[in-house]
Image (cartoon, rainbow, N blue to C red; front, side, top):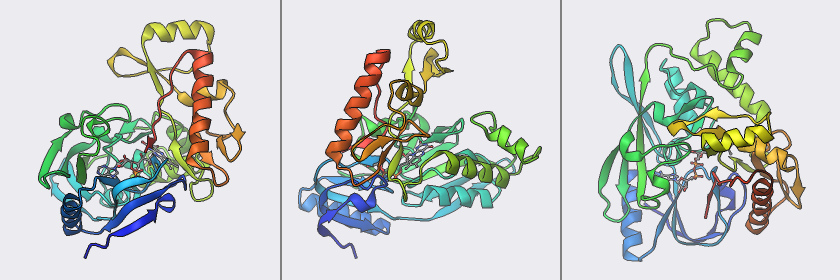
Length: 339
Ligand SMILES: Cc1cc2nc3c(=O)[nH]c(=O)nc-3n(C[C@H](O)[C@H](O)[C@H](O)COP(=O)(O)OP(=O)(O)OC[C@H]3O[C@@H](n4cnc5c(N)ncnc54)[C@H](O)[C@@H]3O)c2cc1C
């Protein structure tokens, strides 16, 4: 039976370890828990807010309404032929466990996304991506429950309007649907993407010329562990800002002033500039103000070093954004969802 608690502190449920109380709070273990929660919220006229692994949120004030912590788990292969398999996972499944499940079944496509924090249900919200692969590359469809009506709807990739760290669930449909399950279409033959980051280099260092799935997963694990601070030791939410997409003309003007400016082609003829580089050049790599700072190895990762409050984080990011704006006349946009 669904247990609804009052005044629940949310900080322990976030990787930044920052939070405030939820007016009402419940943990979901099943579809019937979800249905009961929707009915309860309707009866009590409370807004629903969904929490997965809390690895992409900054909770800055008390959450009025009902917070649902999603722990509805399970993964299964729902269709398979000689070329591909469709694999469906419930949204409260831990993302990395889901990737492991697909690797164990010899399915190709999710390996570069290994060790991204959080749950399956949050993955389409920001179209998670790493090492040259995004969820949208393997996405088949998702099932979502309308929080107003309780009805289920299937969303295709097109319906989700995926873009760089973006989807319709961050905009027009923000707060409207509970993503219940996600289905991906994975290949049964190898089709590795090794050219992004240092994957190929790391494989060669280990003298692996014909990698297997497990080799890629191992290498990604080692690269990520070496580069990213562990939230259990240094509370953080991964990249705090998105990389910046600008017009070609603007990038050419910037390149004249900063010939070492790293830049990559992005969709729609745009050019992507790594936000970490901008933050570093604006003097914020490794810089701390009180208990908050940008990490010294990864300038894009904001770390709560010592019991920071949301107010301190918000004041700090204002300074980071102002410094980047002053130096490059570019606006940083938060990747983390600020509530
Ligand atoms: C160390 C570290 C490294 C990271 N590396 C990467 C990376 O390489 N690439 C990348 O893309 N991200 C990365 N992230 C960010 C994060 O892991 C992803 O954004 C992840 O998908 C968030 O999952 P979550 O379950 O923790 O979401 P939460 O933080 O709980 O929620 C995020 C948002 O999604 C909404 N949401 C969650 N579940 C649902 C649901 N079932 N239905 C509808 N809405 C929902 C929430 O309401 C909220 O708005 C990293 C984070 C950390 C801490």
